[in-house]
Image 1 (tube, protein in one colour):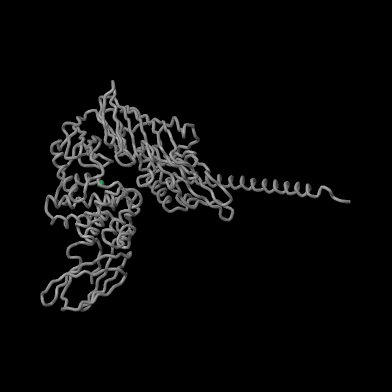
Image 2: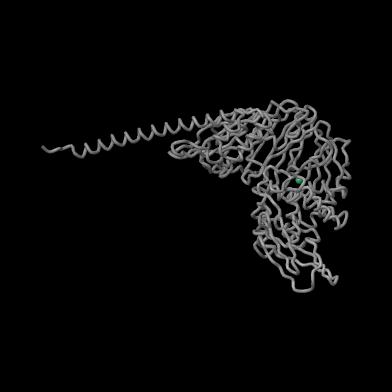
Length: 613
Ligand SMILES: [Zn+2]
């Protein structure tokens, strides 16, 4: 008998097998998901326990273990937050893990919690899910624009409607940091409400890939900070106060992301009994009982700080090409005239050497929550305490503190070594400002004090300029020294020209900086600069003199640098010579005369440690 249904039967069998395999795969998929969810619960429970061994057991990343251990040591309360599997296949998965460390000001909490909260990659190894890596949430995404309308009710709340223009290129969606106390009312993407998770100080949004997407966030922060003992990140009294960038009162990625430098357009409303500074170039108008402050960023920026006060008597003066906006109470010292005079002096010195700054607006803003002094620079403003302090001094340690803050107007870097280009730069320029007042002899004294700061700060062996995202302090001392050594390498005139060029290009990454230095030097300067940025050390050299032969050895990380040595010969003659140090061990033989003694680095032009024999 012929089997007539042969072909049809084959097809049916194939279909049955296909369904069986599919059921099997989907069953396997379900099992994998359940196992991963189980692993996430273990991590959450380890996060809230106080046993670091338990946490280390499920969390293999050293950097996060350190954060967790320090939180346990400081007795910070810990609350695991929401989690979500963003992607899963047979052997890998991406998971949003969130958690909060509670210890005081919600801005500081948001900042610290984001060292844990984030997206992590998991891999299935021998059938078990293991956390493998932390994914930088800004890696493929970008914030291009922030259009912020904010209503300030001092002592009560702020209400923010932020319309962001974002590019999403990450399959895991879009995520940015935001103060964890924000009470979010609306999240809409391209006109539609969208799925989101707001937990552990991170706002994650389900977003498909696409450029120029419109994200609208509407939120209120009404659990405001009024703790007298904890006013750094924010303080919101009915008389005066501030929300600093580190309060995360608006969303951004981080303090060193190259991807959230955005164009800002602001419209702030505050009762007209107050003045308010947005940290950007701004205009005020009065409308009924309210003051409307509009502002716009001149160049892409991030992390805005806002200050307000009911007692300020603002004074806007023209200082050369710069509009100087002074927001202070009338008893603030130094007064407007002195500030203007001193601003002009510093600014002229800096401009003569380094060309024009990025913006020609500068605000000087009094923050009555803190003691006297020049506190920090935030975008286009210098923040002072209750009063300012001295502007420049040569004793006991030379400092040009006010000039330092003005010099921040020349750089606006992002990415690795951000703080080298920011704080290292501003500290280096103090040497130029000090020299303009006290003469060139002050320069050596200034850099010796920065050398002392480097060692007293315990940075040797512990911190690199490259990874100084948290601004530990190393970028001020070692950073200023690196600028100083590059100045020696290039010669002053070429160095000044190089900085002018670097500022003019508007591309302020460390790669662009190294490229400018290389161009000025006429040779690739990477091998000179990178060890200074990436090593946690400074050169540690051992010098031995046998007859007329120097043997120079590097005992720590390897650097390349010129080493000046002053030679004193037995016939009384003194000369200087420079050795080009390139390797771990080098021998230099001198032909002329008999050496009686020598002095390493006689003009103190190299940051180093030496073991002399
Ligand atoms: Zn600074």
